[in-house]
Amino acid sequence: DTWPKDVGILELEVYFPAQYVDQTDLEKYNNVEAGKYTVGLGQTQMGFCSVQEDINSLCLTVVQRLMERTQLPWDSVGRLEVGTETIIDKSKAVKTVLMELFQDSGNTDIEGIDTTNACYGGTASLFNAANWMESSYWDGRYALVVCGDIAVYPNGNARPTGGAGAVAMLIGPNAPLALEQGLRGTHMENAYDFYKPNLASEYPLVDGKLSIQCYLRALDRCYASYRRKIQNQWKQDGIDRPFTLDDIQYMIFHTPFCKMVQKSLARLMLSDFLSSSNDTQNTSYKGLEAFRNLKLEETYTNKDVDKALLKASLEMFNKKTRASLYLSTHNGNMYTSSLYGCLASLLAHHSAQDLAGSRIGAFSYGSGLAASLFSFRVSQNASPGSPLEKLVSSVSDLPKRLASRKRMSPEEFTEVMNQREQFYHKANFSPPGDTNNLFPGTWYLERVDEMHRRKYARRP
Ligand code: HMG
Image 1 (spheres, rainbow, N blue to C red):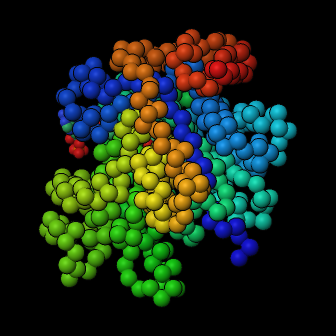
Image 2 (image 1 turned 135 degrees about the horizontal axis):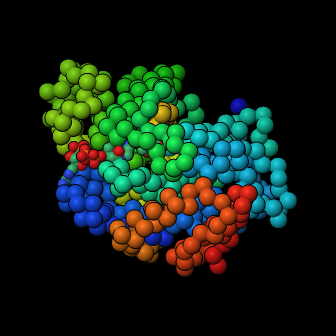
Image 3 (image 1 turned 30 degrees about the horizontal axis):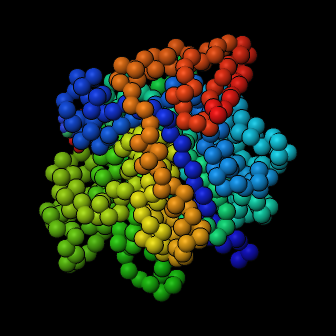
């Protein structure tokens, strides 16, 4: 009981590229049926980086923005963790590059390095930071969790599910978004659904259909163990009833594409339904009666179940999840930062009063695979100037910032992808491009010397 109270997220900063390609333009350009990306995948726009940006520059920008906005002294940070799968060096951590920002402060006593497993690294970093804070090694300072990725695919059906971005989170006690202690449902297994064995290329190998099944199976398993753990906690408090989605006011997910998330929430409803007793007269399960005797793992590719579930869960989706997809539908998959971008979107679309006292469920998935379902408890205090109110208002300009990006044609997007291929892992070059295409204050790659040492500069 000497633990600090309510360890969690105090502040949150989001970075995404200043340029995007429209998904309707991409549908035409790729000669696919209208609606395939926009309706079938639920994607509106996709952000992308030029060759002037890499994972280091993305993370430099998002950390600098967070520290400047909050005006925290650089020596108030005692741990810095980076979650990413955008690896440009097999040894040197992105974290070491971020130490550059701390140089003038003289603060070098900062634990933490990079963590990698596909999209799960950000969540692992968050867990590491919270674990540190609840341990004997904690020295009273804040932790910073940084996650970011550049999600790019070769020409083909996976390309429209790309994106790029980074999120930085300030972790500390008495947080407006406190991690709920003891409540992590985790599922890990060995799968080859999405992986990056090709060191000569930025692109992953992906078995799209398998990856969707792996994601859904991991979701089922994590939900089951989360439910078991919370019910056990309740029992100790004398409460004996099943946990259902009614006990979660908002639910966010790792978002490879938005349609996947709508189906995922629907799936949690199926889990609730299948574990509810036969005599339940719960009207929210209307339309699902025919599936009473199905087993969860038999339903991954059942289109009838899909359709009935989407219908039965629509109202719940609109209430608990839809708002969290704003950044994802406009920017695409940000891998490790996707889930935390969803959190920012959720905050940007609700008032502090709406959120106060609620539970936010969070499902993190990384291919390969590693997954956890956990939750945040939102503080009760939403008064003006409270940490919750400040956090919510700090992300409220997200829609405005997204609207200020530059729309590029599919031809220009393809040209940039070709340039990224050409410069990938090259030495001795200065990336071409116009820094005016970056948001003011953005860090960018200025030069890679003949020894692969990278030099960064900041756009005024
Ligand atoms: P595809 O071949 O384009 O898929 O690949 P499709 O033909 O099945 O179409 C997709 C949906 O669009 C279908 O909906 C179609 O019916 C619909 P569904 O039947 O499944 O509900 N559709 C249309 N709808 C309206 N109007 C139309 C139309 N045409 C078709 N005209 C796939 C899609 C996602 C597989 C591909 O893009 C891909 O491989 N993406 C990358 C992998 C991925 O995102 N996987 C997701 C789970 S794994 C994960 O999340 C981890 C990840 O983030 C990596 C990490 O962990 O680091 C990816």
